[in-house]
Amino acid sequence: MITLIDFIKKEFLQLKRDRRMLPLIFLAPVLQLIIIGYAITFDVKNIKIVVCDLDRSEESRSYIESFKSSGYFNVVDYINNQKEVDYYLDKSLAKIVIVIPEDFSDELQKNKPAPVQILIDGSDAYSANVSLSYITGITFNFNKNVLIKFLNTRGLFYSFVRIDPETRIWFNPELKSSNYFIPGIIGLLLTIVTLLLTSMAIVKEKEFGTMEQLIVTPIKKIELIVGKLIPFTLIGFIEVLLVLAAAFIFFDLDLKGSLLLLLISCIPFLFSTLGLGMFVSTISKTQQQAMMISVFMVMLPFIYLSGFTFPVENMPEVIQFVSNFIPLKYFLIILRSLFLKGVGLSEIWDEMLIMLVIGLVIFSASVMVFRKQLESQ
Image (cartoon, rainbow, N blue to C red; front, side):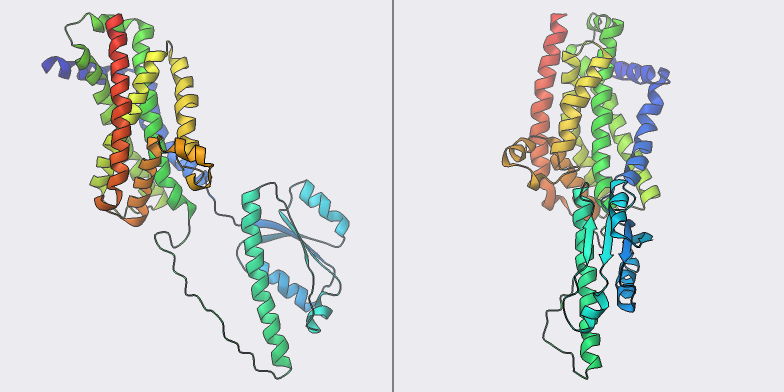
């Protein structure tokens, strides 16, 4: 036991002497959270639109004003000729061009359909779909107001039976994408730090030839493995606390669930990341090789298949089946549930159990492979 404690102290001292690694461990994740948290957003606003108003009437101006007052659109220019439309869309100077024909107001006053041409840049499919939903809602409200005005001018009473939904949005009332992404970034950064640190630190011993020196010391193989992993486990928990503090300070994020439950849920997840880091170290000969394998073989599948950026439900069934073996998928569900819904253990115990099983399998297999490698040296 004393030998193990001394070995762990040695690992921390070795880490302390590496002045280039310390900023990467403790400063880089916080900076990444801030940068990614502000950069990644699905909120669509300030959509640039160009208006070609050939009618120049009170009705056409009112229709355009309904876009400006919505808070989603920004009129960047007015044009007088439809031939200029291609220029603005081709140069990406505008995402939407609205063309109002000359007889727009006349058709409305006659209570006839008044066609309006709306051209949308569809190169960004997500933004185009959201913009289209905004346009549909704005146009619907404008049509309702026109109908009321038309009936009132003729002394008709405007009343009809309608469905009037009272909508309430739970868990994220402001629909801020940062509230959804920040908990995911915490899980992603924990993956990156523990995976890269474990794999590169062990490979570093191989590169410098110190692994052979450790093997011939009185320390047992299992003590060597545990002594290597315990420091990175502690660092992982420190990273979580640092990133949580940054999320609270910079993004005003509220943890509705239990902080203790969040930290406990990190334990089964760390089995997976530390185990994968150890496995990468066994098949890598250099730190550069370990980093490349970690990024392309582990981190990218974790990001794309876990639901961090794309909903798993929208993926093909084969990919959905593969995603069931990605531990980050379950960790993200736990993090987002704790942050946004404030759930307890009873609501997330099944994700924790699945994550624990996957983690133990990965960790046990990696320890066996790493131990065999140590015995063969």
